[in-house]
Length: 482
Ligand code: FAD
Ligand code: NAD
Image (cartoon, rainbow, N blue to C red; front, top):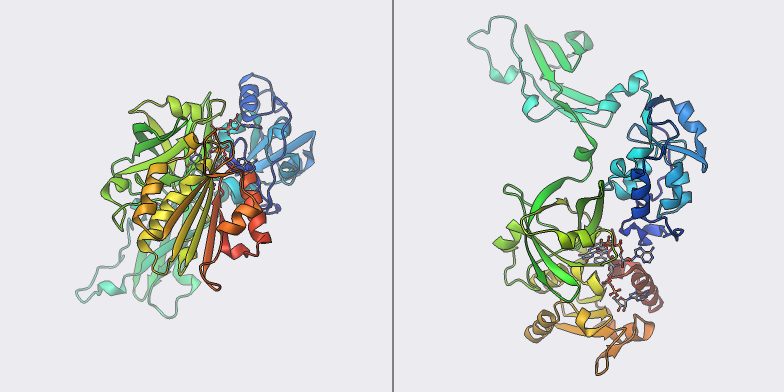
């Protein structure tokens, strides 16, 4: 494998435009959106320069294509000519150039292994890397499946005597990397040496013979299937849309039924990816599931939340993904991934003052957090939530928030509007140092504080800066990003 810098590799058209972890969004020229890219890939143009021919690419050949005007990269053994994609990449050309003429798998995986690059770049595929003899296993990446781990024949060649002890039968285990499978055999014999083991790997079958004391044992293992990309990456299951309920004029609560046999509880502060095919290309976007109510009366997730998964989603009429979600009919299916996220429950341990700052749908990670903090945190003295929206009509679950503030003396909510209509008596403006300095105050001078922030990228960037200027450490600030 070639070495590639372990840098971020933002993916097309998704929330990776958030400048998280040092990544930056690069303004794209007009006509270079994800939708434009999809259109180009469907136009029938020859994007590889090979007129649809697929070739075997050697490392030497790959290395030659390392210029902006002629750029090939390899992801998981497949080589793509990404020259035409350069201008469409939201993370910018420089990011892509880090893998130019090289293996970009690691670089890609570090940030967005969930992105379906295969679908996105399929028209750019040049071919596959030529196999070096040693790389053969890596290419097909076989796995020994649970069902085929059965020892098909571990037996004594000699007649088994009456005093034969089952414990003397060797046992085995196996582990796998992306390039090899190692089978470990335990014999309980002290002086095992390599002459006592004969192994043959032919086609997909391993035949091992080992001689232990007076017996010869035969181990027969068969590789069951090759691991495909979708097995390694995030796992998706299809969930049925059960209901859509208006939460505000442009935002809906989606209730999806998990398939029977699926157990999926999304940890607090984590999100999942929803995946759908839009004009022939698979698109994924992150969404943070919410409990069905702001604060459940149960400490453990209620039965309902184990069968269903709920999302509060704002529909952007000119967006790529949400209009398709909006058009999803009751009974139709959408794919939901496993959870991901950088928030750890331990961050809430011993917290005395919890401050939540959300802009618009940045509200969603706060819901479970609030519920979790108020129901299970022992030391908590105060939870203060400052919710930034454009207008009063945009405030999500306002009634529930106000009700909660009435019910629990530790909880306080403040609404701040950036585009208030006449008659609004509450706070106005956008996130600012003066708003935060009054709001984010320790209840005692040494209290343990956690400040969570989520919303539009500029909102988060400014918020973090203001908080740092106010003297809060990065350990005390958590920013929700994908
Ligand atoms: P997009 O195509 O991304 O467009 C969104 C808006 O921006 C549109 O109005 C569009 O016209 C405008 N726009 C797009 N590109 C440009 C541009 N270059 N210049 C100017 N304007 C532009 N959202 C929720 O509603 N609920 C959630 O629970 C939720 N959870 C999230 C969790 C995480 C970790 C992250 C990172 C994001 C989350 N989001 C959530 C946001 C969500 O992932 C999508 O970004 C959102 O739904 C918009 O998707 P879209 O494809 O419809 O819109
Ligand atoms: P919006 O455009 O309605 O804005 C809501 C408020 O955010 C505004 O009233 C304003 O106070 C503030 N704001 C917006 N733009 C700002 C700017 N440029 N500078 C300072 N403050 C600004 O918000 P929306 O359409 O609901 O968008 C919500 C955002 O939250 C999206 O970008 C979404 O991706 C993000 N989000 C992230 C997560 C996550 O877990 N990371 C979860 C949900 C939503």
